[in-house]
Length: 245
Image (cartoon, rainbow, N blue to C red; front, side):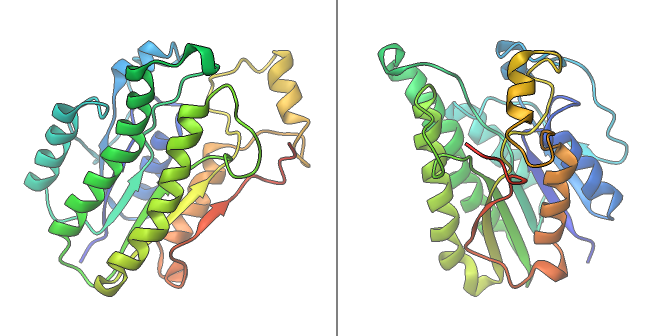
């Protein structure tokens, strides 16, 4: 049976999700993708709204995973496009704000998008799973390695995602489904200008004096979802290229 994968968080060309979609397609997977272009516009990403070429990739309808309606829409589409045996949850809600700026809605946008949607999508994946070997990868951050005081709702939600990978790896292991979480570290997806002082400062904190790239992330995930990665499950993997805080 051909390997079939759903990748979320695919809506702008420079993003990690877009690179994952291309790489997995080139490796022989049948790929389905989901994204939220409205979020990219809200975040003012430089490539927001730009079309990305996905030959022979099925694009599910954009939806907002911070809402019940958006989650339900994606799960309904997934049910109509079953079965899949691989899942990468690359979507995220992430904004900056110190403690005094928190609001009920902003905290819950992080928790619902990053945690609730991921839990419900894993549940939906499990319900439709018919194979003997499946793999799920979630994305976490460096919240366990140092302070993220200007984005604590994001850090708290990503800590939950890391633990979700461990818990679900045990719950789904008997069905042959592996689950891991990956922290890719600072990754250059175009959200900071290359000639800025901040970009150069972050680059200097790597041994190689360069940012991580979406290709770096894809190389690891291709391994985790391959036959060679079958012995890896329940792990929170910090793949940061020696990034020093």
